[in-house]
Amino acid sequence: MIKRLTHILVLGGLLFTGLAEAAPVNAQSQTPGTGSEPYAGLPLCQPDAYLADPQDCIPLGPSSTITQLAEKGINYPFLPILAASPDPALNNVDLHFAKINVPPPDQAPVYNTFDDATSGGTPATHLKPGNLLFVSYSQRADVDGNSFVYLRSGGWMRASPIDSYSHYQGLVFQQNPATSLGWIVEQTHP
Image (cartoon, rainbow, N blue to C red; front, top):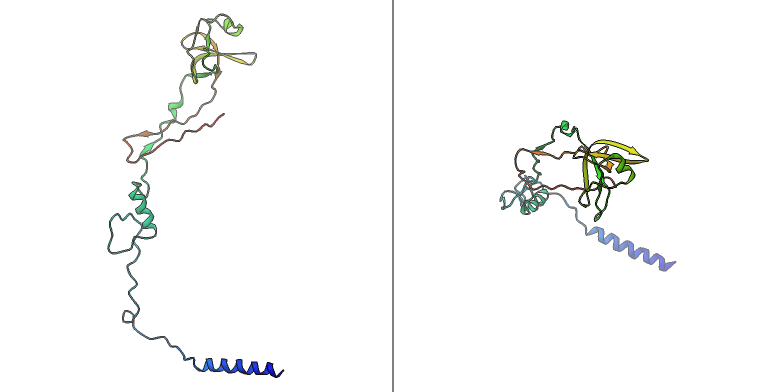
């Protein structure tokens, strides 16, 4: 118990001694610009590309990113593409198309008559082989779930008519674009 009391008195004495040496701190009252605080420096530049040192501001923050893009030849803000969509009425054509589903090196047969085409008779000619073969046709007939088309150039053949197709027409440019651009083409139907 005496040991404990001694410890409390010693700690209390040290604490009191430490507080006695503390002196109050007061803020200095000075008018702005006359104090000893150093000059804060230049302000940040407005967001823009600074390929040369602007001297009156610091090109950091957004300006740094825009300057890095400019050094790579990328304009920011991005320039608009001066193009327009063509008239949708240009999609209205009086043509019908069909896909030929014969893989190369086989040749797709063309028959003189509808009966020859449906019965697998002797072909009058063949289309050259290819991966993407399409034909234009003027008539269509379906027999047992198979479609047969009469080609605009003459002759019947089995084909897969295209009932709907993309109405995307691209863009019309009045002049060459000022910036580079590219198209991304991806398959939309299996």
